[in-house]
Length: 455
Ligand SMILES: *Cc1c(COP(=O)(O)O)cnc(C)c1O
Image 1: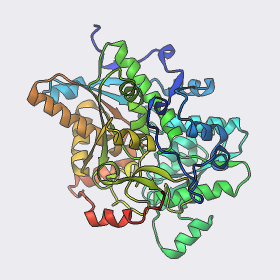
Image 2: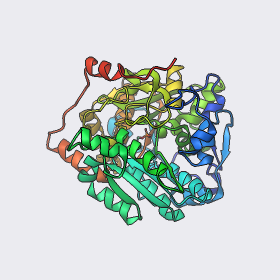
Image 3: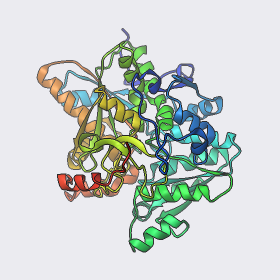
Image 4: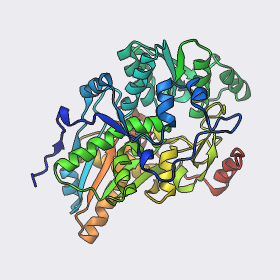
């Protein structure tokens, strides 16, 4: 076996030419998404009124294993991919662990996260369909940034509803989006019925992701030639993000490394789902075994403490209903600093894999996450996003277990992005002012009591 370099790059010709749809290998499929009004499985026609037609097809297709990545998308990918798979030699040495730690780094593009992998695909299909533009929401701002980059590349109009508190707290994210030509509106706004209603009911509200989604969907519906796009949760997004897992697998295979464990942070489940897809596929086909681990914040513990049930994806109840691990669409997570992980639900694919016992989940507290982030930054150089640091925390925990047992396990984790726009959070941590919030059983039960009735 060749000696393993610090950074394993694939050659351009070794990059994936197809995305992998793990649903094709699942015997028991994720439950279908439902029309929120009729509560019947949604049709392609209904879904195409919200999303681009090609994306709606991908969303509903649970039998096609591989989708060709169109050449224009592959060419865009080549500007910032393949992303490196890094052997964390320095971290291993510092921890004194016999484990071999690898991380797949998705922060090497201006938007700073993996979200660009799906943004460029969604913008491409919108352009192909001859649309004028797209609308979306953004919470922490990473998705809006990625989408504004993708839209400017294809010369599409991009309208972003940004949760008001981040609009105010993260002015630089907003300016990156505007630099790429996006129109950014704080949500709730006065542009939509949903926004006006929420502003009236809750004067002075600083907004939520669920509300911004409803606004963006409504805005797309009101404008000719517009569709709505979403950066996580959906199966189409997981499909695009499989590029992460496929590259990781190809790089490991190139050096004859068999992963023992694959770890990812989970907000809506797209990076995690994309990273684990090829590994889960092998498990589903009975070819290999892996320990697949989702890491979520203890302030928003949908997998570890939620319920597996149909729920609304947004506050305004305009999006399709999805069967998923959820805390209830009315659950408002405490203001944690990992904005990208503050979603009440979880991708239906990740939820189903978890329910089938193909993967496990853990929740971690934000102060221990920032401790791991700082340790990682100091030894590996990269300043990680708070979201990504959830995976770092569990990777370090597992490496320390190997130190006790003396096992040289291969630990692979997804480092989804960089934390330059999260310095307020780091400041809180450095000043010793960060605290941990764990919801009570009552709080969770209260939100779960409002799940919709679906037989
Ligand atoms: C959005 C985001 C996440 C969480 O989203 P998923 O859909 O669960 O992947 C994780 N890390 C970063 C850096 C993000 O921007």
